[in-house]
Image (tube, rainbow, N blue to C red; front, top):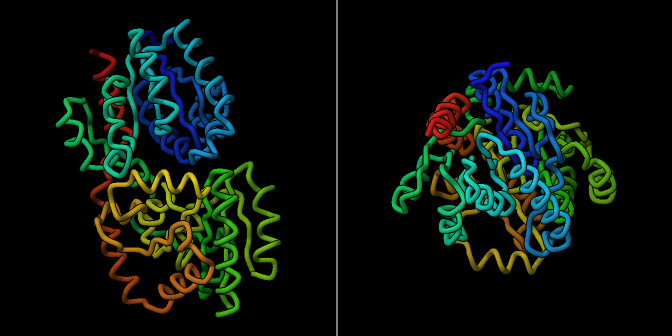
Length: 381
């Protein structure tokens, strides 16, 4: 056993956090082959040797109203995890995204002398900017995935390091469109639409029916279209009845995961706002971003947002480069027509690809190594 290998506690709270943490762990394991990492995580982290005390999908809830119904269970998990970590202190705690869960936990651990690192800055530049005070008390360092974030923290005297986005390293710059179509059994000459309704139960509940109904309308407009819908593990039982109800006659294949293959293979995607939209941008794909949630949750969030955009590609480009249809605007008709507009305008698609290529290069920083370098320095303090 390597005596210099750290023992790290980590929490990733949903599919996107598990993906980012799994990529981070490739760098950690390369630096410390005897690394021990434990806490809350998913299959991507487990593949890197992570020991999950609770599964990551326990925390995969979004929206104020939706969180309330799960609050007791989530709070109990956080308290049990804190007690366990304080009884047997790790060398450091790394909270991966999930700020509503992680920041309170980090504050408790930091107060007891445990080094705390938050990987993926909360989007204080988009909404809930007052959270920066909570971050100040909770973390020793923020590892930022977007280049404009460290200066925000520097103004507040909070240590922060830009490490790039791990997806920009993981996703190839040249999109493997033909290979992905072979993998998915899709014809080379077909027009393919990828449907990505989100990775949380609440997202599937509110967004999937709209995207599936839009697919049904697109199929009526152009019967030759093919559709693929990557299903997050554990959510197929929710997606299948919605598919039968809203898109029963559509040539739509449900995939087990394989979201990257779907994005590489498609010509356009109807996609829920979130990390997946950045993945779509890195695959240089035209998209229509949709989002919907409980009406009360939306009213509360809407009052706190600072920017006109909600989709990550638009936020990073500071432009409505791709359409956003949110809440009441996310009707099947508008979604279908916005997606068809991409299919009918190759020049517009080519211009968007140039923007996404530049974005890909900006975010590519060998994040696994860069973040591990930063974590090693924090451990040495």
